[in-house]
Length: 199
Image 1 (cartoon, rainbow, N blue to C red):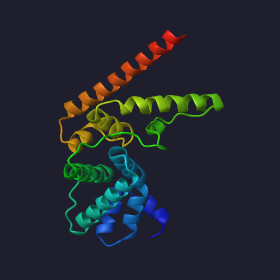
Image 2: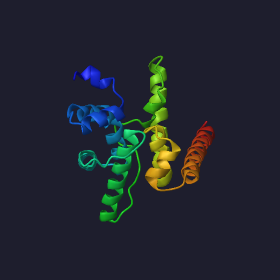
Image 3: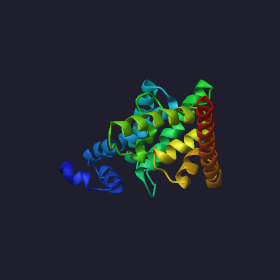
Image 4: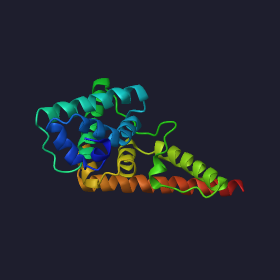
């Protein structure tokens, strides 16, 4: 089967074909979803080497589950894999006896997902400064709020999926997002007032 044919298939079709013996389908699933899964892990653990280990462990678990015929998910493959990764991250930090921090890492811009468009150099510089300021603000949010914000805006997960992954109610997930956005607005307002006082 050609790579073009594989690329035209949905994740669910690729999973089904992989279970039926087409190994190339797993490569396509990883290629298609790696960036989002790996970056989400990296944002959560703030360590590239650890993120690589957990990413590999996640897909070992994915492969074992698929090979054993235990994959029963109805819905998005990405959501299922992210839930596995999230559980592995929690297991890791429980062993380490510390709470994971959710933050951005150098070189990754969470707000790329907002798809700003560069019109000129000035716009690009303003965007870069804005994103730098936003990363700083996100860093100061409580970890539970950061987690929801990252899963929503980077992982593009629904609040139902976020609630399932983080083992809270949908209302709790929505509440954390509201608090996160309110916290960012408050920091933005505070920064604006600080700049006014310097003017």
